[in-house]
Amino acid sequence: MPRIALADGRRLDHPHPEWLAHQLRWRWLLDSWEGGEAYRTAVYGYDPHGMPVRNLIRHKREYPSTFDAGYSPATGRPAGTDQANQATDDDYELRRARTPAPTFVAEAAETHLARIYSREVKRDGPSRLTAWWRDVDGRGASIDQWMSGTIAPLLLVLGQLDLIVDHPATPDGEEVRTRADEIRLGLDACIASYILPENMMWWRLDRLGRYVECLVREVHDDSRTAWRFWDATSWTLYDASGEVVKTAPHGHGRVPIVRVFDRRRPRCMNIGIPRYESIAEIQREYYNRDSELILSDTTQAHPLLQGPEDFVKADGTVPIGPNWLLPKKKNTHGGAATYEGFDVVPFPKDGAESIRLNKADLRDAADRAALLTKPAGASGTGGSTVGQSAVSKRIDQAAGNDLLSKIAGVLGRAELQLAELALTVMGGGAASTEDREAVRVQYPTAFDLSTGEELARTVGQFQAILAAAGNAPETESELLSRLIRLMLPGQDDQSYARFDAEIALYLDVESKGP
Image (cartoon, rainbow, N blue to C red; front, side, top):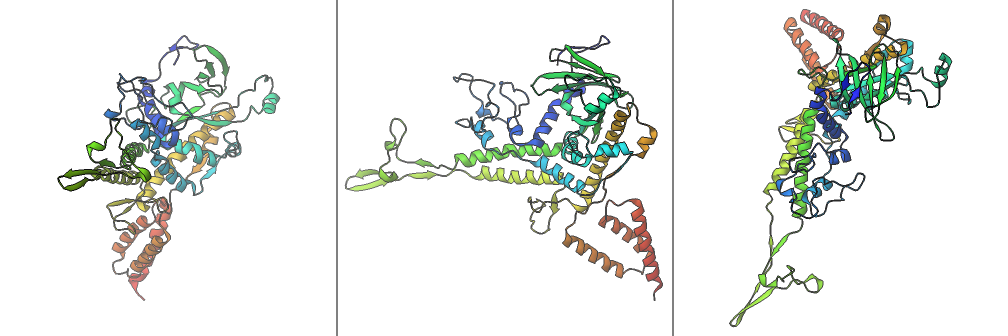
């Protein structure tokens, strides 16, 4: 970053220490979620040999010699070219070109969020807030579409995300003098957006963890990099060399940016813990092992022939006759003649089979981390845990409800913080206590994760247990109450209280007999 001179005489010439410690990890997590070309070509630095560090790990034998003609440490195909551009006689580039990027992180996030947003999210608040919820980004996206399609996956994958709410920028050539001008140009609207953690370069927090000052890196449409400094009263735009381009007051009474977290990292003040970090690690290992298997299968697809040395010419070729006829050498010893045959040299398969088993283990580990596995003995399983196919993949009932409830709680808190920030920007200052207390965002806490067959079987078993109850009312009431909580996880306390009362009444009647 350039050396930026602030209005009060201070100078910013380096990013925040927490940003320096985590920015590379954020880029890697985002690439893991996007997959495809971003995952294949991403560079995370350079190794001691000067070669780019990518998600595909380079073998020792795959390093080019510094004495080779045309050696360049900055290898890599031009942006936008075909992925097979360099897949020639370089085993590393062959592996990188032919190995599809796994999508474990995206699958986990999509599966969890699809379950959460398949249920209704209940929202209520002041009329101006409910009107804003119908178009939060100025492009027609409702709050539900914006959260489920953009904010929620980024928040879970990165562990934190900065949300910004501000009025639209004044169009070039326009001048605002009156309130009528603001309305005519639509400058009284409220637009929400987000800032990736890698672009929040520096910050200073108050005792409540809110931004007092921050510096944001921006990339404009013409590929120019700019820097915007925010404080409680104004913002200042700097160009790539650190010179002031423009400054203007914003009138919000605070920095209109809030960082929302999945979970906070205990040893940091403003850093979150990514929910799918372990799955991203497994994805990278699977990607590398898959590339090894592809290379192995490719090189072993063409068998080696072993035959008489006399047939090999000086240039290393073997003569083949018409119709691809390979002659055999004739040896004569006295009156007898023998022929030397050609043998196929078999490739050892143990290494490839080991890689296939390791890939299956990694796939299972990723599914377990996302709670997308079945226990042993379930239909179609044969191991200790079984990763499901795309058709049958689903979330475990008990543990899955706990996980989805936690994620729903994270998203609900993020929306509340966003709503408070939007009310602040709309009101030109701090949101009133009345407005804040009127905001209600309720995400679902109970999810139907059982199949119809499993649900019918569970209901039948519960009814059979209930029909045989009545001999020990107090003990059976306690046991049945626990069973209800296992069968129907995620309900609120009032619902469980009603269930308990109904069970107690039934057992009381049964214990007294006819």
